[in-house]
Image (cartoon, rainbow, N blue to C red; front, side, top):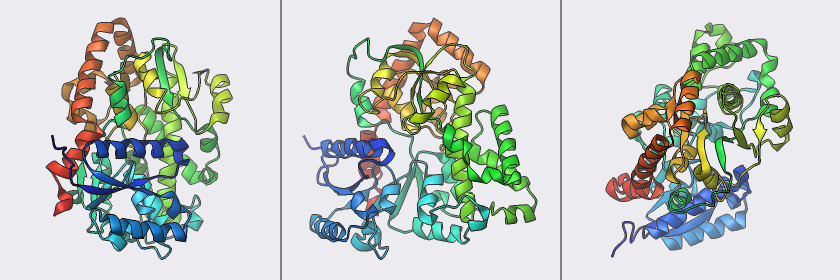
Length: 437
């Protein structure tokens, strides 16, 4: 029996082993193995040789790729790693050297891609450089790039800025990664990370405390207004709240503070306000408002902040979990996982959400329109719009195990049959092969 990707020759990026705690590398390995199971022949291109500008490795990789003759390139686990694959004279391996169609699977595309293209990003307005929109657009508009985003909000924002036309980006609902789907077919040990309710993720206390632009009074005041707005409107995306406050400033102030997308400081400011401060404050705000006790797992980015989480925020910290071997067991053995979706997403959800459902877990998270559009009314069962609704859902589902199990099984079936990496690969490579045009 033929496989859906049989005969297809792909080159896939493999991130450096130690980046983001090894999670991105392991994701990419899982994804390349899935492509092979679907019948594709895959060339693993290790990005580390490019980030260190190892000239011998780069030359040999180019020779090997030319011999392999790939039909297309695919960015694994996300589009950032395609941008990193360049020669010392800044020729991109895929678009300039091989000149092949390149599938760009975005993650936090709105923040991640500009950071790579115009970085390193300054955290002081006085160090800002201009011309960013032109630079970002010139890279992302390459005709061989085929853009795919798991977030309609990102597509709209970049279209509004005139960087990428929305018609050139295809939406996909975030898929579950292969290992989480496989865990869903297993029976875990009932004693493995057994919890009534848990949170698994990161907060960045130290990094938030030391953000340098807080020394600028007007920026600190803007941040305070944004925090107040986010607290009042929990499910509004932080990108929109920040840009709304920026738009309310008078033109001379915006110019002096370089709060314009054409300036590199803007992108540094937005990245840190959303990824660092935003995630920390939003998650702590939700977790400290829970009326039930819960277990805290994770914080591998700032392990030194654990004592402060315990002492200042009274968190019942347990341990940092391996993302691939232990986190699925927590999802499967917890009655409820509570989450605040990474604020780097505007309207989409993170792989954590889809992974939890894929392995049979039950997770409550803040409202995301893309998930609602994909899953329909069932999505409303697991999303909250305010803290009162969250606490009410916690009580409802802890008190009604049968309903909790029914909702989890329905969403697990949808994710494992429709929204997994195998289904996405078949869709973008075979069913809707824009790369062949």
